[in-house]
Length: 169
Image (cartoon, rainbow, N blue to C red; front, side):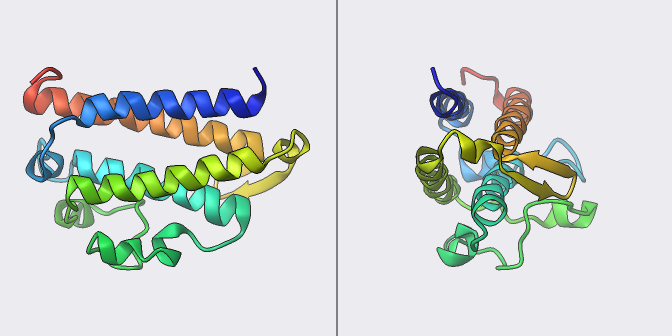
């Protein structure tokens, strides 16, 4: 298995797991928080999608993210300036979770672009270095960040779902 196939396999597995975690959750469920200042499942999901969008579009390809170019901010009824990260407690408490179908449509658009970009890469492309706010990474390293970041947050969403209603309810 080559690196592209492996990364795609990881991304596909994360999406399958996420689908199970999110199955049958309502907008109200996604907006639920165990207490003030705690992230909701919807905010965490949005953060994951917005992060992947930024990594793939802006960081790796040097172009506007889909959030802006596809006007996803309008579709999700959020400010264009929404970053998806570094929230204050007040911002966490006030985050208006979009409808599940809308967040997932944004995610599908981002993931399609991620897979299109991944398919275009040559083995040498994976060695190119890029700067992130937390260090310099190869393109392969950025994909590793996306995979680990998504896995970590899928775990958080799963935990919150379990607190709210259990995994099989």
